[in-house]
Image (cartoon, rainbow, N blue to C red):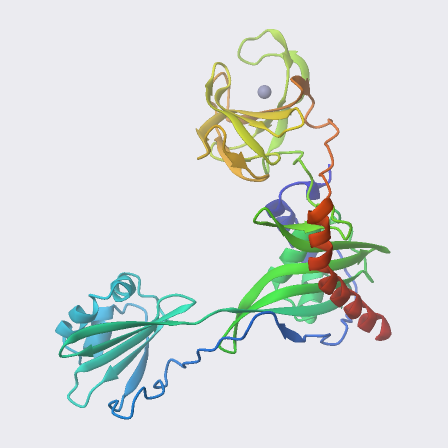
Length: 426
Ligand SMILES: [Zn+2]
């Protein structure tokens, strides 16, 4: 079983192998700083207020402000910041009436910036800080009391296109193309079911990628998600296009087929098979018996994943199986997970997505050690989970397919354009 049929985290970890040099080659050539063109997807932020600078005077009569910015040092508390500025403790107690200030005081982070407006008399007139990524709080203090103002700082999502060629390793070549490890991981996750990035990469493979960057007030915060990727691996091109269905973002091929598999072959990571499917002597009962599932040994507490999308059919205690979850995946398919130490937070009837943690490995019921007993049934008949032919995921159809084509056409065109630039540069 190729390990890329596992869950995303496993594939991501497998990537470390690539980074440490499965692909050893000499020269590195990335399409020169290709196409790091930015295109704003949303209306740019309209509020622009630099922390250290005073806001534009609201009225002619507004008093002159004198903002001082303080960067929080290790060991400092809000009280000590006030004290260092010569501000009386009473002024801090007044602003603590504002819930965001109260939260700030209890979770003051090293390196965060606070701006103080201090009057000529040494009294606090204002305090300004970022409550979170999108909200700046300004507290005005006067004899009458405190007044709180929230300044929204919307995050702008920009899409970025880039292209690269594999010369040494995925991460090194990605870095040369200006791509962060987070973006490269996103690419690997999008294509993990089609390409084994730990084994299959070859020198000369090429990729084109469209991903998001998050910006605020003209400042780049961090990378966002991967929107689309083309990867040509050993002459075969794989394409992943992001599309939102039922509130979930998924990757599809250009024909609208989901890239992820309908079932994980193994619903647990880093576990070894200790007992396969078929007749065996039962370890506790010491009688020959049909073993109707697969046992995976793993430490107590190891998460167990839903093998596919489905509905919880049973979650509770079963004689022999101990704490057990049964999922109904439709089309007559059910999966069973037994001997859990703890059940996940899902009740009977609730829907779960593939990869959701539905419980944790244990040895409840009849078990000699912590393991997962996993069963796969088709219309009530037990199948070998390691050999059963897993159904293909349903492609998008009808209006959903039409919407998919409409939504992904622009990004497909972008991928093609980058590829054209890359080919021209060879
Ligand atoms: Zn078993």
